[in-house]
Length: 179
Image (tube, rainbow, N blue to C red; front, side, top):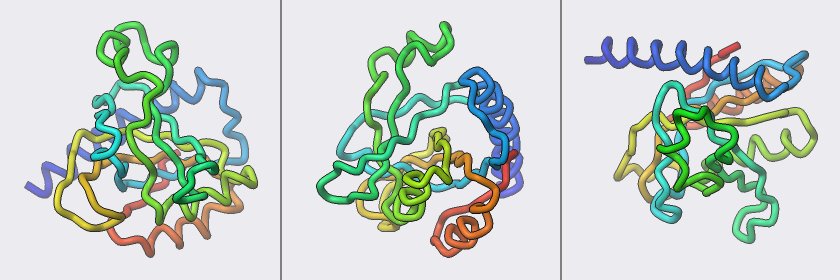
């Protein structure tokens, strides 16, 4: 069983990496001097927002957007379904009802690490991909159900070592250098 899960994870990451590279290229991101770090964690707040993000290997990544005006957490980062124009034509029928909607937030413990790096432009982009798993009953990173996901963080190379060390201290978070 564990071997099958690892094989599925490897296929998922490999396929998503190809899609992510295509997405990055199509969006004209300047990746020079940056590396992409993959962090397996969760999207929190599903019980509040009630929008399940699209699932699939070929789906456009979700956007992670700083939310400094959040009255409860000034480090908050929301996870949003991109606008319809960012999806391939054949995906649009499946997602038209949730485009632009917030599906949740990056866990506070990660947002606390990411926010200052976003604010000083050390992190140039964060996207997320929902794996299709919904966790219940774990009180890690707050209460409520968790949407398991991968966060893909484009970060300047000089900041990656410290971020990796900080993430390794977070229970339940796994990191992987993707690109």
